[in-house]
Length: 363
Image (cartoon, rainbow, N blue to C red; front, side, top):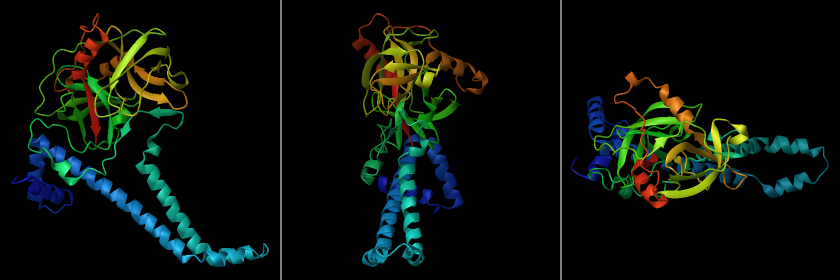
């Protein structure tokens, strides 16, 4: 590629189907070999989608205003005043415009609900999953192509459409997050504490427990050091102190609390209820006890109760991982059994943990 501008033009032609079959195949190969190029493709695709949705909303608004201008409001008022028998005449006269206006209004409402993720929410409105929706419509084209030649990738300028948290299951690149964070994703990247982004693929999902296992497949990724935490198999105690680290914004956020119930929302035995402050973006983050054992994965909160968050119990994560056939994995997935966080101060625990907790970016 001669320049960033040339690359963007090539990506545009690739996404709009303007390349010949040979050129398309060549570009597909380039995406597989160069993760930075692949990242720019998914970013540009997301950018185009956001622009398209914005344009559709603008067009709907214009159509509604046009229909409104065609209605003679004063005439309608004059005809409404007489007795009831004139209602039928009024309906016959204006039913076409009224039906069109109603249809456009319904479309506008539906589009707004779809773009806001309304239909992806839990059936019970009192429960809120904690996937973070990110507004990237204001990102400029220059930001989208910035840093394309940097290695490793220093975080995409386009933060993606949705965000969440994930954390390492093993040193060789396996990460767990919530299934609802990555559901329907075209591409997923994770970003570490140094701001480096890596492409991942989904290797296992368990919608029943709201879990997804990802694997870093980026050639720029180097194995992590041994994990400092273990995964607790036994149930935690009521009132036990806990803490979490996640990404409700673009850097690590620490929160602490305690286990307030041994069951989750509406008595769900798969989860704990935790009195802790969490926000959209915390989904998929680790919940740890004072010794540094992972006891759960943050998944949601109760919207009408302050501090009522929910975390999937770690023993269900262990149970879910056990159902993955090891021969289906390129690399072995073995959970750490040695805890090096026990006995450390909270600040030292957090310093060790930060390298193993990732921001999840969904496109």
